[in-house]
Image (cartoon, rainbow, N blue to C red; front, top):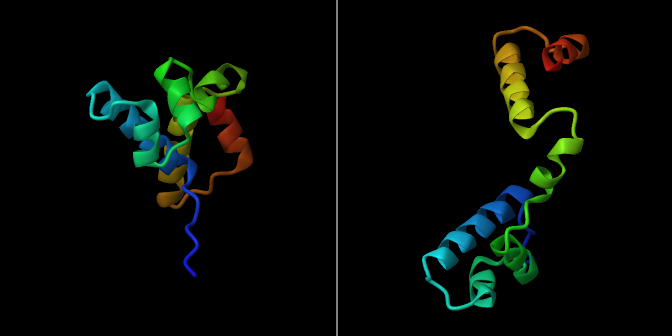
Length: 97
């Protein structure tokens, strides 16, 4: 018996974006057909087509760091540790501020 693993959030988001592009290019006649083809929830695809934001974008204002700042901090930590310096909590906090 082969059990399919659920998609990760990144894979699902990627499929949603592909479905949106396909719908904009009129490759599918309906949201349902695009949702079935890209294996994404029809309701989520319909929400996105009507302009609803992703959960991460919608709640970005409630976060201490914006998504861009968080990504920049993550890249900095990766670079720091790759050069052999430990990313201590105090150092990360200072960089985040």
